[in-house]
Image (cartoon, rainbow, N blue to C red; front, side, top):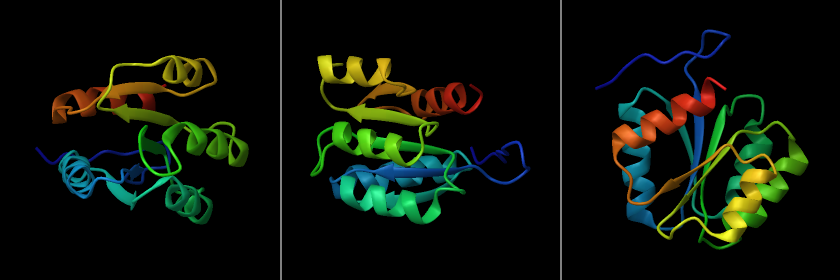
Length: 131
């Protein structure tokens, strides 16, 4: 299923994927690589912020687990302070919550329910990257 994805400058898109669950992180990375993306990963929100700060010019999209240490909500808020145009998708095993709806109103680009299929992930990413 590997496909060559490109962003406007002709390079392979880079996605920062943050999840504190090792299995979810591993599966998510494999899915993203299978879809043709370059992947950076983080094991919690604080690490996601540090990886983003160090690679801000390269990262095209951030996918954050909502329920991890230094949760997705506070991580999203800090990423927006670093770059108000950052593209973020929130992932959660729980149904969309009031906090997630607030984040969507504040510029979060989407929500994806876990567990997600590679097809659902691909569709959500393409919608955000083409936005």
